[in-house]
Length: 173
Image (tube, rainbow, N blue to C red; front, side, top):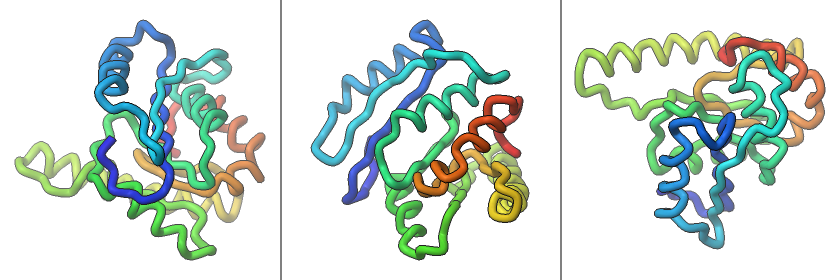
């Protein structure tokens, strides 16, 4: 809700249903942060369960409602700084950029546990790099805890991507 980005932001929270434990927290956050001219936020529920894992249905649902030219997917446990959207969007100034991923946490470990999480996250990024390469060569799906891509790229391979998403058990491949 506190992003420093001059462009339009549409924030979508997607839940399986209104009774999930996080739904009241999202509703409270939405109430505390009303929409502004360049920022809108809403909670969506998955209407049709087609995948083998709920998160995949959430990604497909969110994408169907997204309006921007750039789409950013982020896990619910991602902790991002106020310049997250700005930095991700800046990467797309290069027309050759098609997919960008980043650590899901601000990198400032304060204890051993968070240091391990950050180290694991960097290992994930190495794996996602391989996934992104496969996206370019084989039209596969590769992403991490946070992924940005152009809507046009997704749309040009939508059926292939959604077919894979809906039959995938884990998203990090």
